[in-house]
Length: 345
Ligand code: AHR
Image (cartoon, rainbow, N blue to C red; front, side, top):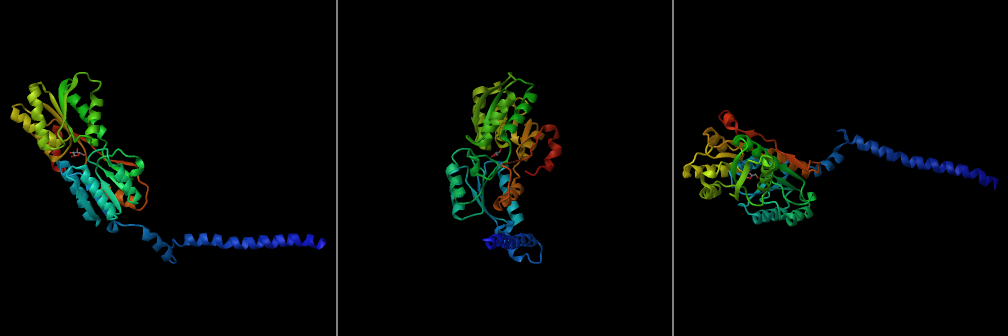
């Protein structure tokens, strides 16, 4: 019994020593893991890490573009293609000719081809959940470029683009200044159901809400195109004639089409009918220099560099903000001549 009493502490001591001996290699392992960052014995650990990290050259990107409806869109497409070329990214580019069904088909084809990441400018806000979910299920991250989609946030990695409501507010405030707070306005709306059309309408109305003299007398879509802008402006003029004091166009292309309609009607755009539009494309600067456009609010299409930067981060599992806003300005005729040579689109 006494012998047993003496043996028990001895056994405990042996057990503790054995456990400490087992723990020692674990501490050593963590040490050697951090040592693996050193060049000498790093090969195995770093090649395992690198195997999962992509570079621009081995990234395949699917891009579902809306179409070529405006000068803005042409510049946007050029920026995406040019930057892909600069970086050596393999770009699969699809032009949907302004049809949502074509964009959906393009996304499905990118999924089937197992691209690394998909960029999409949704032509309208709604109707994307199913196909975005399919991309998510396939493990392919999706980046919204230029336009938002009305989907839960977990269905896309990030949105890169403008604050369209703010653009509408800027246009509204500029219009108040130009009209001296009073006037009858016609509105050329962008593509029905698109984020910029919805938001630019909202922002403009917000801005003029407290100025009772500002009245929107007619509002109709010109689908962001020059031809439609002209056609709808002709209809506005037919109905309201010189009752119209001002035009708010959701993009420069529609404003440029409307300028033609106003001239053909026998009125002076920029004088008889004041015009504020959005985009700040070169055509708008030329119109301002000619005195036919009173203001353009900038919407930046040169999104290529930011898009591929985000794409690489997303593909490599890096955290990115849910919204990366583009920086934008507002321009008036007095600075148009000096700025035109500096404009890139
Ligand atoms: O989504 C951006 C808008 O789309 C631009 O303002 C317009 O010109 C384009 O077609």
